[in-house]
Length: 406
Image 1 (cartoon, rainbow, N blue to C red):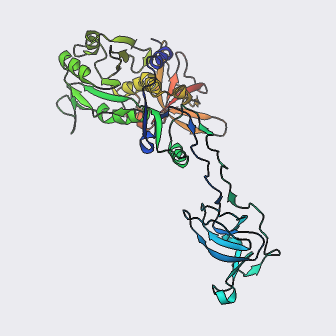
Image 2 (image 1 turned 90 degrees about the vertical axis):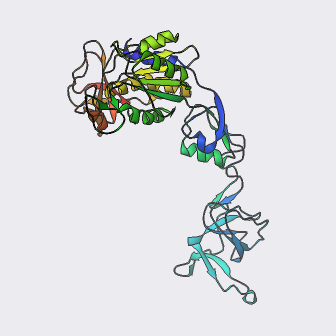
Image 3 (image 1 turned 60 degrees about the horizontal axis):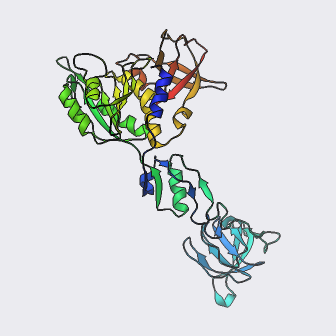
């Protein structure tokens, strides 16, 4: 299947998962399922925007106390002031805030002497201002509802819940948020030749995908279960596929037609519907995507590391975006860049090439990294994106799309 068509097929293979209500901290990274409406005015009361004094009427003012954030005072009499902290609620009768750096207190805290008096002035020099008893009404006050009124729309549904969104929801009076449940992902690592630890030996190599895939899943917006290692037999693969209780089952290797490649036979045995069976892309053309009768999706990654990443970027990210309810977000992350050197293209298929980008004054340039063979990760580790080289393309100075990397 052509590369662009395969990405579209993966995106259309699934719809958003169920909506759940979760505590604010657990909503981070999920997609907002319903519009966020302010439950209270923001701020909920007239508040001080600065440390200083709340003043009532013309001065000089008699200082009658102190208001910290979280404390209240019912009323402030004309001609008086109260020391106030940023964010504290203004008492009734307060006209303005006199900032700490513009207030001058003269006199001792002694009732017999009339108590201290507050003037507009310079506390460093002790000089009063030309009009020491005047502060512009409303100065440095955050009026109730300045940011939003109760019931006002704050955010439309469909955006990702960021740390700022969590903070705004809390300020607006929410303890929980309704989000689209992120997909749960089972990871099946195939290959008897793979070692879990130590150095490569006796013709066997270290497994790179098992340690790497949970991070890719988290970046794509899913929740990965610990990887499960599966022997290279059809029966073992059938059992693990049947047992995997997840929205997506990702397998590594076994996507081709070799004697130990059992994925196609297993999916056929389980009655899966093929969405994509092979893609016109290099590396990673044997990648595949199928849907089991119970609705679970099986994403088959080739065993070579860079080819597996190619499959994640081609089929995985559109599938994750669809399940998460991120309409159009996956394509929105694609950026354009200018190739800084010639890249060999494939005559018929798309090539995905790791690149390092530099942002200049006029354009963003993309330079291919070295060591970018299908079994290599070294070039990808130095890259910040993957360039999409169309058939017959790749000329120096030409524009290319760049897929983002974690």
